[in-house]
Image (cartoon, rainbow, N blue to C red; front, side, top):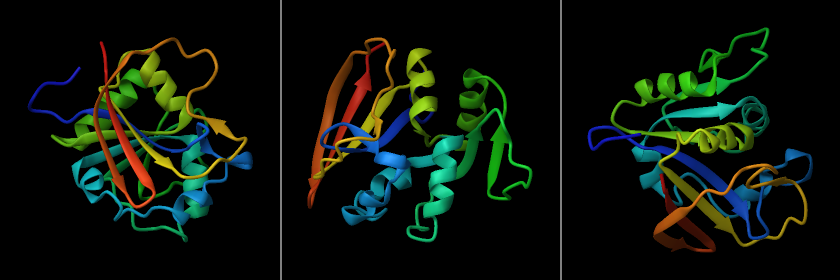
Length: 178
């Protein structure tokens, strides 16, 4: 999918030890008990654009007052329902997943495109559009919520290439085998 002159398509996830990326009711406030954008600044520096699912965008809007300092470049939201009032900081896309990834990659330039949102990430993985998965594992058990991968996702083989710990947060990185 990529060559040496372009960034990678990276699914970026924060996950509880029991495999949830959001708690019951899509809560994500537990994340900021353990990390900020300063925890692994090299990830933000390598990111040129973000492709976000509508649900994740809505959760992020509710949380923006708590943690407004993450700047991953241009933001694109893939949705079937663009909002009535536009957000000047976001481009809403209603196209298919391949076109959405291509659009966001162009905006990312030679930096990475970060994929956020369970459904968007699953669609990208199912279509072979992902180069890397980056997971921040936090020291918490949520017991319920939104799982890392939705039911029905086919097997995807990964190759681990990095793991780093900062405080209680462990960052795991995997290449997606094509």
